Length: 381
Ligand SMILES: Cc1cc2nc3c(=O)[nH]c(=O)nc-3n(C[C@H](O)[C@H](O)[C@H](O)COP(=O)(O)O)c2cc1C
Image (cartoon, rainbow, N blue to C red; front, side, top):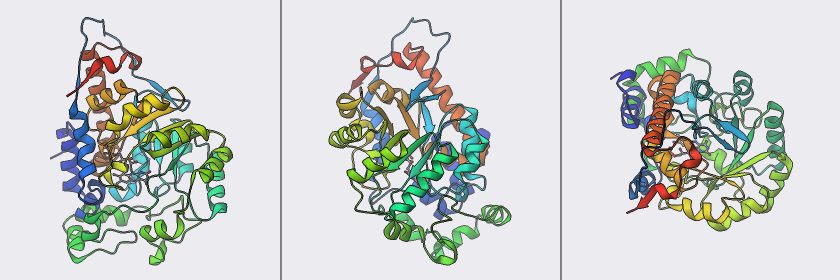
């Protein structure tokens, strides 16, 4: 199987599975507990049907959107994800370049493997910095200052990871940073030698957003203990309100699900919220963002940009979310499998296919701009 044989999400997933060692594939692919939320995220789009209009003159169309003051040429962006250079040696460099090619936003995780400064210098496209809140308040301030200086457009605080999700696939393979693989996990690396050769022959693996603050070398601190030892489980709304003030720019909370929380986000001055269950990787049994979307849009959609992520595999999923009132959607695995499968070429192909699907879907729906999508176009079963 080659990249040119990939025509959809499932093809990229299959190719990624062929190319990267099992523990890494499972880290991307897996969710928490029984993976109920992971499955439901995509299934939720099937509860809802599109009702097209025809004969509307759709020769030219515009799918651009503006969220949190950022103009995106497509209504989807690459959501921040950790450890991308483990999936492909180009990691964030590949994802940022592909996002820039399509004129859309990309996120850099606190657990990113390329520095936010390097990516900011390389591309003009809007850049998000995904932040975790640390016990050490000075560290939080220093990291925000660094992001400000680099010219980050949107600060995105992840609020659904106050403790790590129970990812049993990772427990079985022993996936952790630094690697502490089980024997079975090691064998998986042995049968994918190309990945190992690339890993060893490219620049050393680093976490440049944290390097100055956290010693991850020599097994001193694993990502698991980063979460338990350095992040602050007592984080509350007052702390976040202070951060919003300090940042004094576009500020977004990722992982909001309840109406009450959405209203609090508006009150403390956030300019965006991402409805998200972290791709089913945190609280299993949590509702799918798509199922919760209408409630949130009705409550706060006129005061804050409501965005969603989780389970998006198709252009029609994007159209359904936008019809319900989301301003844009985030992609996770929909660009991560392509990254793992084929680096920048893979991500570019995936984003291109997603764009083409949205364009085709809009034409078939009789829409020439995103603002023409509305709940009139949807029926729930
Ligand atoms: C491998 C992987 C790593 C992730 N790392 C982060 C992260 O560091 N910070 C974060 O806020 N979200 C992270 N996420 C969640 C994504 O940003 C996004 O919310 C989720 O993947 C959307 O669901 P989807 O994969 O079904 O599209 C990660 C997701 C995956 C699959």
